[in-house]
Length: 129
Image 1: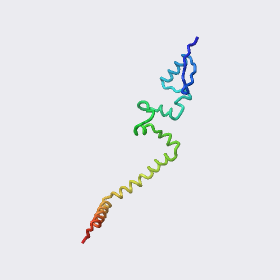
Image 2: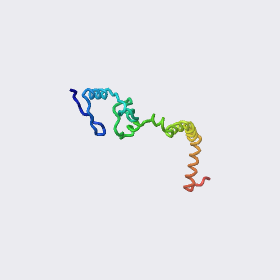
Image 3: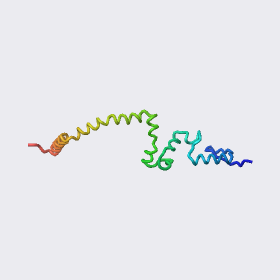
Image 4: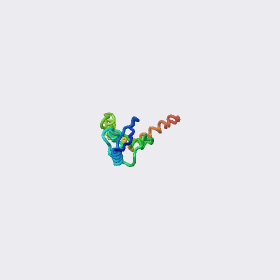
């Protein structure tokens, strides 16, 4: 006679299974092997199996935890706006650097000092002779 044990599913249903089958399930769970249709068959399940320190939080409370658990690869593959935001930012970076260098050049800084001094003098009513 085979001994039986009860296995409870997430729906609350119970199913009879032999002790041998239960031992196999426990062994697979201990080694991290995921059966087809289990939690590892979804995007979130595969995200949990990624390498890294420790187990991810159920809800990431800190900004660092949110940044580490964010599915960057999935968004890059499936979200055109996410992809082109970064591509556009990188493409515009040389233009931003060029404008920054021109605006902060020593000649431009000196010119703006003179302009601001003139505005101050006008506001205080100081007339140059």
